[in-house]
Image (cartoon, rainbow, N blue to C red):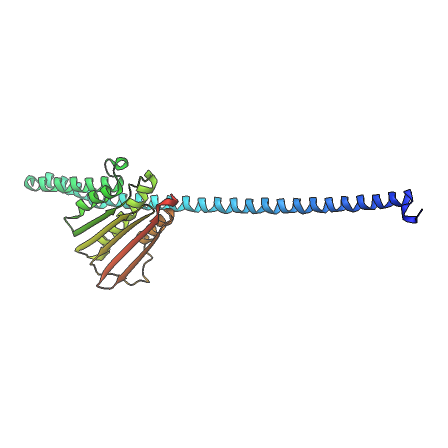
Length: 251
């Protein structure tokens, strides 16, 4: 009998094979455990990043709401309250003929502030109709051309529709405050995948590097909340163009 055929030698080789097999199994177990730990670590990291991004979005949303409250409070104080004070003085001084005109003006101011908060029937109205109603209130101040191309019946959630409406309001408010414009071109296009809003004025324009005002920051924050992209092109004395593009499939 050959040396290697002896039972004790065979037993030794069996144990050697088993030993190396066990080592191989242990190494595989350790590698798998380390791999699983890496995956779990990456998932926790991704979850933390997602949570942080959500916190930042929430904070930006809160900041925007606070800016809106301050703006509305300013409107109430600077416009409506001042008009009511004038009415009181006219009444005290017996100038009753002027009161009717001031009451109409105060009612118009109250109506505008109410529309700025939330337009009537907001939830039931389509975005294009909301813009048209807002534009109707602006026609006393601007010559306006409003165009729509609606190729898709887009049903927006209330939060998305509100953010889009606020973007429109912010752009228009900036035009009213700063542009000294007389003419507006407004274009809304909705397809199966995209929404585009374009607002162009013939105002005084501005230097591109001076775009860091609160109104523009609010616009950019809202666009980010909508996962959209926007750009604003302006030249001094040649007006300004605002363009918003959103892939609404990401909603």
